[in-house]
Image (cartoon, rainbow, N blue to C red; front, side, top):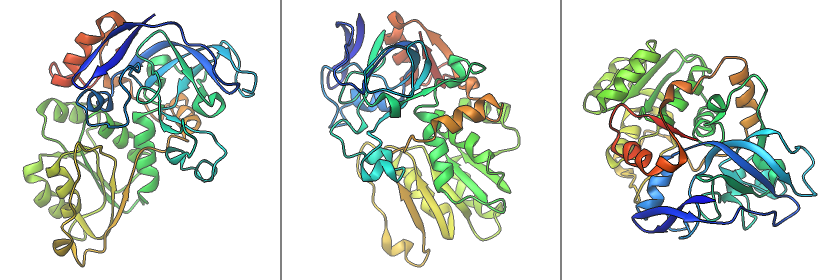
Length: 343
């Protein structure tokens, strides 16, 4: 099968690989019916993910159909349509039992698919710990509706869940890319008093205004003053940083009111610095880290109930054999692209 593969820093290419086989009783083999490209895939190609292993098939956003199950898998059946979770987790270690599956201590734990073991930009993928890492898709939910559940939507759901949002809050989301929009959808479920979105791209600003007219959108240059003018206590009660630049990292704490929660969802190419002398006295609570994707079943339930819809994010569709074209478009951010569906 053709598998889109991390060759070396700066280069992905198709490689002909054998169909994967079960390696452990807890494995599953999934036939990929739809996949997508994530900004994290670009980080791998740019060489900014040191743990990524050359030679692995890339891709970690996917849905598919179970072809084969290991003997120890008990909650699934061959033929099930499933979401594949971006996180690989055992379900048994201290962190898994407490819901912090991103910190799973198993050697295969954490972000493995498409990073340290073969991922899903191909025809078939082996998923370790299938009972944990696969979630059955309800019959009423399409593949496109479910495509982002295992990664970017799980990230937004996790960010909203840990940010302690109340109905009295002003929430600022920095970044209106795919993860930012998924975060926005999940923040809307919390019904805060006001939601502000900070974005530079004119295409993405238009996207937010078209699909979410109840949300205020502001440019980074105007953001700080706008937030102060549109909040009750000199800044946002909750700031969620999804953009991942030096400027937006600093903007996040600057726009927060004293004693606010600042949740960092973004993945950065290099370390960021907290200017503690300037921040002294703001008493901010920072929440950081990778997505803990243990809410997939609940997210799918919300999609089935019509409470979350990420399908507007799919602006372009490509067959697998044109994935290089899809990558060029996605990285260029041309043609109003938000997310591409591959399949």
